[in-house]
Image (tube, rainbow, N blue to C red; front, side):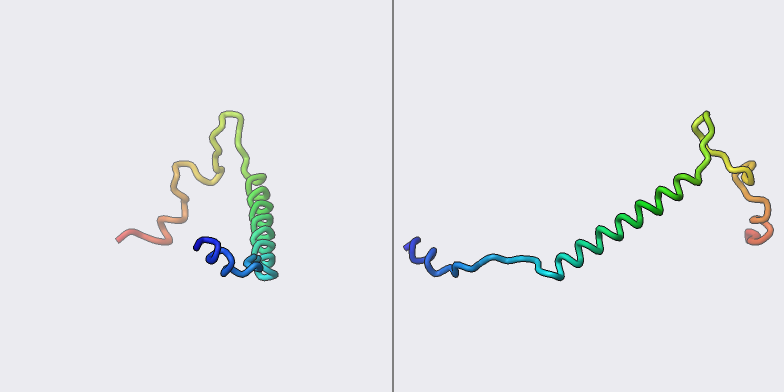
Length: 74
């Protein structure tokens, strides 16, 4: 009985992703490469002193000077 079931399965039962699968994977690869390239550029802009904690020259106490006047609290 098992032999009859095996013979009923078509011989050409291979499935491939085709051209659409290749295009999707290629686009994901290109998008990942662009994101990594952009991230590396942004990381190069960060200035970290020897102490290890980055500082911002316009940020003395954690609050920007003009921000409170632009959006007052109610």
